[in-house]
Amino acid sequence: MSSKFDQPISRENTGAVKYDARQAVFGRHDVIPLWVADMDFAAPDAVVEALEQRARHPAYGYTLYPDSVYEAMIRWYEARHQWRIDRDWILLVPGVVPSLHAAAMAFSSPGDGIIIQPPVYPPFFDAIRKTGRQVIENPLVEDDGTYRMDLGHLDACAAREDAKILLLCSPHNPVGRVWSRDELSAVLDIAQRHSLMVVSDEIHCDLVFPDKTPHQMLGRLINEGDSLITTLAPSKTFNLPGLGLSALVVPNPEHRAALKTVFDSMHMLQCNPFSMTGFEAGYRHGSLWLDELLAYLQQNRDFVVRTVNADLPGITAIEPEGCYLVWLDCRELGMSDSQLKAFFVEDAGVGLNPGITFGQQGSGFMRLNLACPKGTLETALDKIRVALENR
Image (cartoon, rainbow, N blue to C red):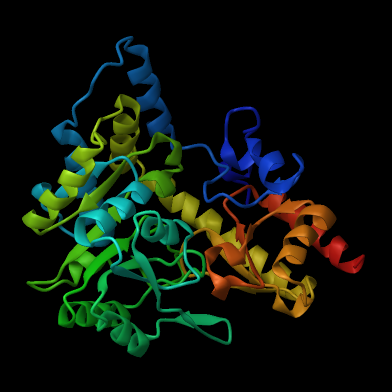
C-alpha cells in the first residue's frame, strides 16, 4: 500500500543526531541509520503549518504557556486513553530525561536506591548514577521471547530500606511490552505497601500497534495514597523530539511542589515558543495522522519480524506490542557484544543500538528502529542477509 510514509526525507546535514552523528558513533558516515528513537517521517501537516505561522511572527521573546496548551493535552488523553487529567496536575518541563533526574533529586537522597527493570532505556541508569543514587536492578524475565516483570523480586527490591523510587518504562523500551492492567495493578500494590514513589515514563503510550491490547495509563489505576508521577510528551507520537517539551502529571500537590523546586533551582521552566506551538498543534490536530502512522508502523513491524525470522539465521525478532522498536535476539550468532556491533556496522553497513547499552541483560541483542520508509528496511535487512551469508 503506497503511503505518504513511504516517501524518503533527506535528513543529512540538518544536524540530525540519527544521521549526522554516524561517523562519530559508528566510525563511518554511510551506515543505514536504524538506531536513535525518532522517525524518518514528516511531522503532521498541522504541526508544520502551526510552526510556520509562529515563525512568521518576527518576535521570539520570553513566552508563557497559554491555557490552550493545557486544554489540548487534557482533551487528547481523555479522548485517546480515557484518562481525565486535572489542569492543576500538569507541570510542563524541558523533557522526559531531565524529569527523571529531577525526580531522583526531589524524592531521594544521595546514596538511596532507585529500582529499574533492565534491559531498559539507558538514561534510566544515568538519572540514578549521575545524581549520586544507587541502581537497584529488578530484571525483566524472558520466557521464550516474551518478557514479563518478576513481581516477587520487585517486592523484595521495594522492601529494601534504601529503595525510594521505581522508574517504570511503560510501554517498555526496548523490549516492546505493553504492560497489562493486572501487571500494573500489582506494581501499584507493591509500591503502596513499601511507600515507594513510582515514576512512570509513558512517552510511548500513543504508539501501540492496532492489533495489540491498548496501553493502560497507570494514572487511571491509582488509589488514594499512591505516589505516582507520569511523564508524557508528544515528541515520540508526532516525531517532535527536537522541540524539547514534555509534561509531568503529578496528582499530589506536595510532589508537584518538590519537583518545581528542583526545576526552579536550575532555571529550567523557561518556555520555547516553537516547542509550545508544536506541542499544542500535535495534541489538537494529530489524531488522524497518528492513526495512519500506526497502520503503517504495523505493516513495517510485520515485515521486519517475518523477514528476520525467515531469512536471517541466528537472529530472532521479538514482535513488539508497542513502540516502533524491534528487539533482535542475536545470541545464536555466538558473537561478543563488540563483535556483534562490528558485524552490523562493518559487514552489513547498518547502524543499530547495541543491546548491552540497555544493561547487562541486553547482551547479545540489538535494537532496530522500524519508523522509516519500508524501502529502507528492505535494503537494510537485505544487507544483513548478505553479511550473514558471507560470514
